[in-house]
Image (cartoon, rainbow, N blue to C red):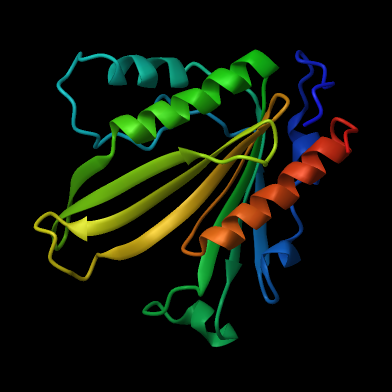
Length: 218
């Protein structure tokens, strides 16, 4: 955030877990679940773009996915949930008021820069992703833009869901936003949530904490 971070410095899972934002950061009544450490890219395809339509073997998408799958790093992740009423937790027909995931990943600075750029490339390449649901075909509409003034580099990502014919349906959703930020060699992510301003504010607070507590920057 001030250009003085050691570009080769990396952090352990436990160090990252301590720097996740407190649950109250996300609002009164929000409760954080279990912190998952060290699960970044641990699966053979720990990625979210399996339904992105592209001809098999066509670059650049396949190249993006192959390289993204090779990244390794310490990590910590937590889902924060807020329920409108306590009794909603036990009602299978009622979902939470909101659910936000925050995560931190540590890798060398040059890898973090490239990783964030790959995220931008994939959101741009997979602007529309169609997939089957129980009710028919749904389409994810993805957008990404650079976000200035947060960390050393940041992306504002959004996804909205519609039916394939554009007609309102039961699986439609408004835009949900995620912010990914690089602070030195740490990639932090907060989302997804329908309030863009809140997501940006949460990411900025998390970025400030990472810079101050891990790198000792203002």
